[in-house]
Amino acid sequence: MGKFFISCDQASILSTREQYGDLNPKEQFRHKLHKTYCLDCRSFHKGNGKFQRTINGLRWVKLSNEQKSNIKNRIEEAMKEYKRSAR
Amino acid sequence: MPEVKLVPEKWVDRYSDYLFNFTISRVSDPIMAQDLVSETFLAGLKSAHRFKGNSTERTWLISILKRKIIDYYRKINSKKGQAEIKMSYLSGSQREGDWMEENAADLRNPNVEDEIEQRELGEALNECINALPERYAIIFVQKTIDNMDTETICKEHNITASNLWVIIHRARVQLMDCLKTKWYQEE
Image (cartoon, rainbow over all chains, first blue to last red; front, side, top):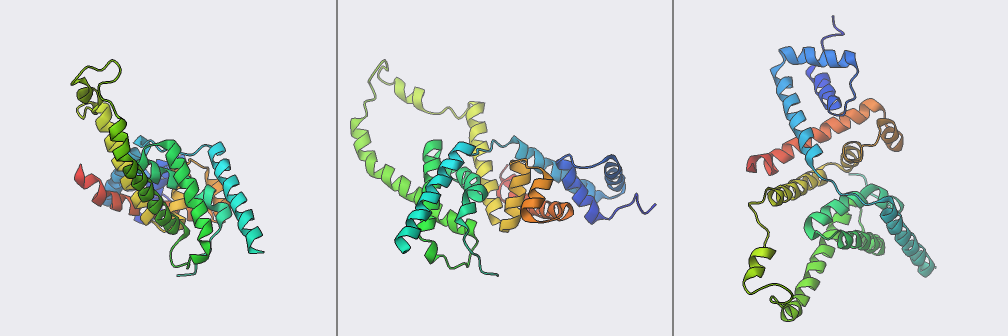
């Protein structure tokens, strides 16, 4: 029986992992079971889901690999320059 | 707090996307934003000897970037007077009086509102991420925004999968609290 019932700490981690689709069926069952009798964890899970939807809705801008390698090259050049001038 | 050492070789991988998001929400021009990020790293390298290790690398780089953004706006403002003299509102096919309505953003347009809301939310979340402990912020961004797989992140940071989930969980709890005060209350 103890394997089915989990603590609130464990449930909250499972709630987070669920947002990333990381739970196996057993963990999903344990988490669902916990939420049936724990109001706090149910409410936390609801907030966690809302936060995930907020993040998913955001348009994150990222530098392309090419842009990153350009910046890296500039840094490497500058580092070489500083090393040369330090000698 | 243990003394922080600078690792310029890792700056681009660790902070470039974060700094780029921070900049683009303030500058809007992607090319300029990329230049500012790049200049920030170079300025950081130049003044590395002045870094005392009292703050994290990321906080220190953000403080340099903020100064770069202020300088950018100062430069624009110093050119503003010249730009206004050269500007002709009646050039081309525009008739007198048309330009104001056509060129102003229509705030009733749902796309404009969405864009503004997205930008403000992005800024709020960026500020909240910036307030996280550095390790939490990096791991959270890698897993949530960059969608990196668990194994790769664990290898990079030399942690177990359960440690990773605890870190992500704690980061999310802090971010949710932070967003509650910065964003959800204003809704």
